[in-house]
Length: 145
Image 1 (cartoon, rainbow, N blue to C red):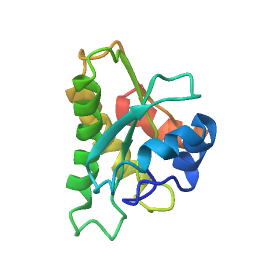
Image 2 (image 1 turned 135 degrees about the horizontal axis):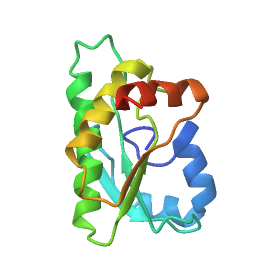
Image 3 (image 1 turned 90 degrees about the horizontal axis):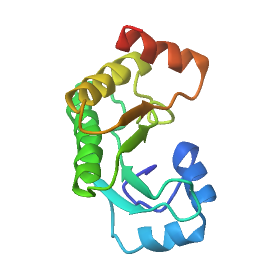
Image 4 (image 1 turned 90 degrees about the vertical axis):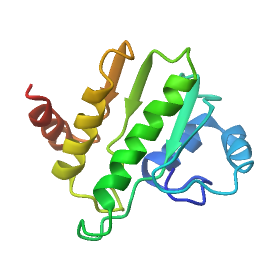
């Protein structure tokens, strides 16, 4: 989710809402808000994915406002929601908070990869979706690939 209002927004969130269709927004409206670091599972509607797991990452404020723990919690909450829905075998993530929220990409990737590694073996596939080749290179470096 782009923000705690949990109603769609720009960037990745806006693209997901556009592709999933208006039913997604209708389902999201059943929730008052989505606090930073927590996750909610919805249907995938018109997407090829059966489910969407929404989370709100922190806005970067220099790193001293609890951002690392909030980002870690956002990734962990997504995994927890996926594990609760026992049929999920593959999970894909964008780089949470690194767009307009300004989280430094290298720092965010280190947190993302650490949480992903902690959940190795619980899914058939865990995918880090990169927006650009530069972003993909950051993840490859973190993965040692």
